[in-house]
Amino acid sequence: MCLTYSLYWGALALAWVFWIQPFIEKTIERIPDSVGVPLTYVVLIFLAVAAVLTVITVTRWSDRAGGLQSVTALGTWIDAKFPNALMEAVYPNMKFLIR
Image (cartoon, rainbow, N blue to C red):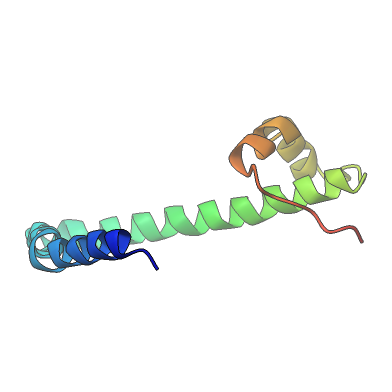
C-alpha cells in the first residue's frame, strides 16, 4: 500500500462525509415531491432503457465478432447505428471468448 494515496483517499472520504454529501443532500431535499417523484421515475426509465440497449448492442457486437449475420430488423438497425468501430471506441478493453 502507498501511504501517500491512502492519505489522499482518507482526506477525500472525510471531505465527502462532512461537506460534499450534506450539500448534495440539502440540495435534493429542496426539490418538491411534485417534481422529485416524477423526475425519479424519468431517470429510472432512462437508466433501464440504457442498460437494456447496452446489453443488446454488446450481444449483437459479440455475434458480429463470431461471424453471425443479422436476421432481424432490430439487429440490422443495431449493426447500422453501432458499428464495430464505435463499439471498440466505447469498450476498448472488451475481449470476446471463443466458443
